[in-house]
Amino acid sequence: MHTPMRIVLAPNAFKGSMSAMQAALAMEQGVRAAFPAAEVCKVPVADGGDGLTEVLIDALGGEAHSVTVSGPLGEPVRATLCNVPSRGLAAVEMASASGLALLAPERREPTRTSTFGTGELIRAALDLDVHHIVVGIGGSATNDGGVGMAAALGVRFLDADGATVPPIGGALTQIRRIDTTKLDPRLRGVRFEVICDVDNPLVGPRGAAAVYGPQKGASPDQVAALDSGLVNLADRIAEGLGLEVRDLPGAGAAGGLGAGLHAFLGAELRRGVDLVLDLVGLDAKLEGADLVITAEGQIDFQTAFGKAPAGVAERAKARGIPCLAIAGGIGEGIAELHPIGIDAVFSLCPGPVALEQAMTSGPALLSAATQQVVRCFFSGRDSWDAARSGRG
Image (cartoon, rainbow, N blue to C red; front, side, top):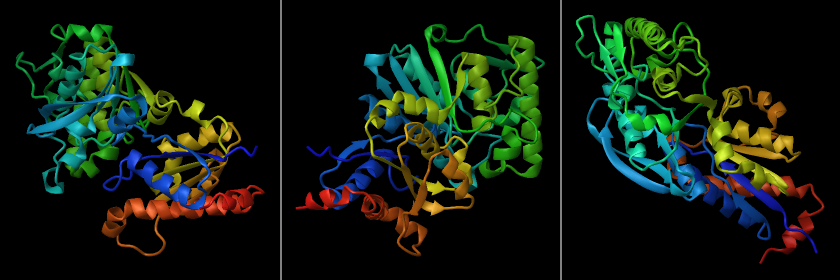
């Protein structure tokens, strides 16, 4: 008996258009239109940025747990974490509490924003009696080195007079002492893993302020001031906690939240896509696959640096499975992706399309593009005649 073709669909979210699961469902429609008899396995993925919580809820059978926390500028926002009771696991997405998308462009001010709400979200996870917390730290609006997060969990940052320093990026230079005696005791029994897609150090030319400050609204003078604040924070952490975070790879992620999570919660920093793909069980789902299709809003040479499609492709290549990608926008340097396992990249759009229209029509465009990708792939295989015979 002919074995059905097995196609694994592993898209990331298309920001502002589709969640990863919505993208996978749209792609499945495209596969069915081209190849009704195919066995389809949907594995929505993420790399630690926006969409992590939703992906893990879908993939792990988790429960959405919503709480009200402080937004980047202190205003109340509703944030959702993923609770997986069967695993004692919670996943927290800092973007939902302290993310850039929560602020209109004219309100972006990294000297005033704080990760306090992310700390409150972690505290809500502790209330669920979990022993493993995963924190995705992409898409931040902050540059506070994680002091806001730590303050929400009981850490006090004191100035030269012993007064409490506000947990914001613009006040980091005032910190002279760190008091961890009131840190939430429940943290001691919890394993923390931080997922991010950058390896930037905390400070310097490749640090949090210099590289990411401008996109968060920082002027050149503010970038310099924020970097000085992070240098001071690193010195105080070394002095008070005995930890060196200045050059830790990933410490500069999310405005230094990577450093803060490592220093104050003992978190391990991991490449985001690796941890997510482990959690969703991609390796097992690739067994017996004939084709893998991944997708993301933008694919270019930067995709190779820890983005979800690259992680999917690397694992497919290790098993000798072809991997094709669909992108809303195709940038420069995609030839650099072929050696890591993305065999070809296809455009989501059939022709020139306004960005707003492409985002609004995302599912339909993705479904149509997937159909053509599948037709193209199987047209050169002996199985194509069998596939065509399966159409109604």
